[in-house]
Every structure is written in structure tokens, then in C-alpha cells.
Image (tube, one colour):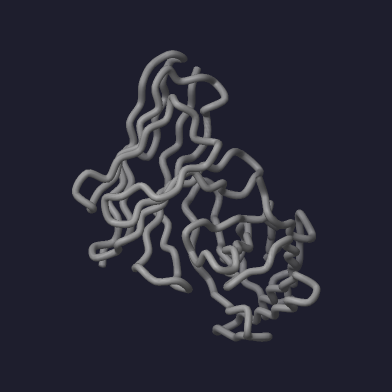
Length: 113
Length: 114
């Protein structure tokens, strides 16, 4: 079963604009990760944020985590055509670690050149 | 570090046939995972290994599915008597042993049951 939900399900923006996608989850977690998946390909790890962190940056990516609301957001700044992909958040369960990741349903991002 | 390797990348099989997928994890990664992903959905956990020990299995893994990691290195996922509902991408991933580590995925093996 899917743990969380990404919002929106689909997003189309012009190249150069910022893209924001959100993730909600249900149980207490140790970590939350964001992955990218190009059509028909495997998942590429983008960033991991721990439950005691509130914000993390990696290049053009900014992730926030609000454990009180059980939600996270991924911001991609200055989007590029190559950012077109599906984006998934994934959570583990507190006290269990990375034995089992539960993924959301994904946001399909389309960057219009 | 050559990444997680999966074979075959694509498999078309007739209903009722058996199929086997192989996964070679990143070397020295103790943990190996199998996930299944259907179109338009996120990956769903199937099972994971700590070295050669299979430590958790999802209820999604019916008795037609069996996974092995005989020497704690590569792993195989076999599906017996395939059904059309088994059509999906089967993803393998690996990670070092310890919580909080990044899990690295392979490119996946697409299965189409006709």
C-alpha cells in the first residue's frame, strides 16, 4: 500500500520557473527521501532528510520536512527540460530504519522549453 | 562502483510460464531489496535481504514468488505460473548496512505477461 501522497499529481511549468511538489505521509519516520524517475527507467536518489532536520539543500533542490504535519516539500529552482520526470517521496518507519521504504504515488513534472 | 545491475531489462512471457530476474547489487552493499511498480504508481516493497538472509516479505509476495540471495551477493526473483496481474516493473535496490543510508536502485526489469 502507498504510505503517502504527492501533490499535485501532475505539474507543467515553463523552463526557468521553480517547481514545488508536496508529500504527505502517515506514520512516524526516521528519514524521508526524494527520488526522480525518468519514463521507463529506474529511480535516482535525490536527497535524504532526517526526521530531526527541517530543511536541506542540494544544488537546485530544497527539501523541507514538517514532522508535526507529516509532510515534506521538494522545490526545484530554475527548472530545466532535463528535470522532466516523475518525483516520488519515500519514507521508512521510525524504529525500523531503511528495511522497507514506502513510496508515494508521485508527481509527474513536465518542463516546457 | 558500477551501480545496481538488473537482467533482463525486458521480458515478455505467456501466462503460466515461469520467469526469473537477476540483480547484482553494488559491491559491499549488505542489504538488497526488491520492489514492484505498476504503471502510474510508486514502487511497492516486496522483500529484502541482509546478506543472504531474507528478513522481511510483503504480503504482496504470494507463494508463486520466491527470492534468493544464496551467497549474499547477487539475488534472483522467480515468478512461477505467471498471471497477467504480474505485469509490472521489478526494481532491485541495495544499500550499506545501517539505518539512514541512501538506497540505490537499478534500472528495473519490465515484465509483460500475455
